Length: 246
Image (cartoon, rainbow, N blue to C red):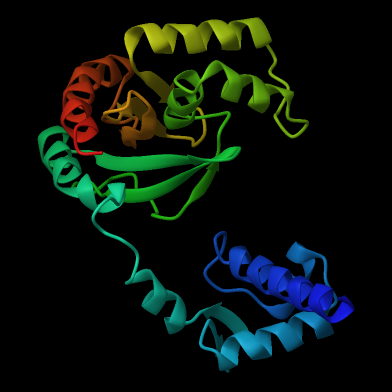
């Protein structure tokens, strides 16, 4: 039994190491050890195994690690038939061409939102959205949509979580969520990122559940508050088509 516990702990630690690369493309042993709270010698042993299996690769010059080809090999076998990132890509590209700005797709993952797809603007000055980015669920247009359109039970669970930040104006925050539900979209203006503005709408599947959030974002030099509200009906129209696909 003790051997089994040790084996499971090693697997958990190896997975914790791999999850470190969701925040950075390259990491050194000291950085990894600091993030997961393990001694460098323990991390080194785990990294050696992961490298031998192809899940990480080490740069001999910098002695830093990055994800290995085995990760990408595994990703090619993900189901594509019901993957929103694949299903919605053509509609997202049409939106980008129509509005001229970056289009992103987000899923909720616990207390975060995860960008699973992005179509970058073709303009010289643009907001570049990184696929795979994990962002907090309490700030930003897409976050507000995912919280506003979640079930009441889900919202209360979020608010009771000790890691959920205390809002400066809790009553005002709840009123804002209600307004978002009434009008069907959320906006943000330099809320999470200086110089950036965004508008987001929910994608509702055929069962009436919010499956994802769709957003359009760009620099405030092109997108003012009025522009965000002008974009909203275009996004809502697009999500009607998307919702029928899932």
